[in-house]
Amino acid sequence: MKKSAPRKTLSTEAIETMLRAAIARARELDIRVHIAIADSTAEIVGFVSCEGAPRIAATTARNKAFTSAQTGMPTRDWKAYLDTVPADELKIVDKIDGYIAADGGYPVYDDGLLCGAIGISGADQARDADVALRAIEALER
Image (cartoon, rainbow, N blue to C red):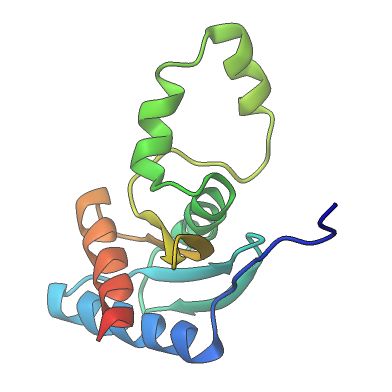
């Protein structure tokens, strides 16, 4: 019997790269957002707030990163999944703290293994998603 399984997590360099890329993209779009990065266990390992970002959006950014890290899927896909869950089961899911079904949260994979996630909040969902995807793309450069 194997006693362990491989697990990946984001490196400090990857976290810094994602934060820098997200900040740069938010500036290009002239938006004020919060940027949250979670490791593969959904713990927040990086967080930045742009000046003037709406305070309420800080928790939303963390929740987007948490949801993507926990589910391994973009938060927009989590939203689509919830639409298929029967109402009685949805009541159970609704009681779990931290899950959110709004676009702007994306998982980060390396060699097929989840290593973390990013959550962006403060603008509309489309621009939150744009910033998150740009940050992930920066890891490939």
